[in-house]
Length: 119
Image 1 (cartoon, rainbow, N blue to C red):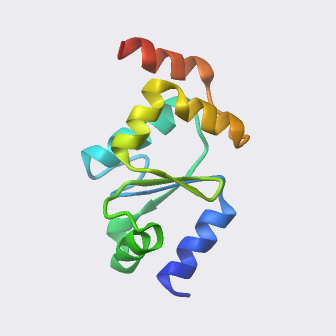
Image 2: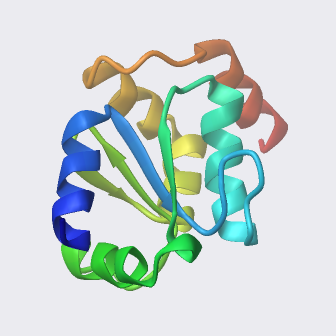
């Protein structure tokens, strides 16, 4: 299976997928750590894909999304963005709305706590 085929399969099989450097339990860069931290704090169930473990996947996800940086977040097959976009969406409440619209369970109180702490 090619890297692109694996990426397509992972995105199709999981409601939320985070392509990141490292894992959700041990991120290997600050940007990946921030996005994983948001998802973990919100209690979102997601598949983490460590792009450092496979150079073909690392390059393939950039080509698949036409987005040059990692991390990359996908919700119900839709590319959401990287660290800056996810951070902005979290603080504005847009991430809550996206997750709710897509039927992805998350902790609304935790989302409010993030916003309160960053107000």
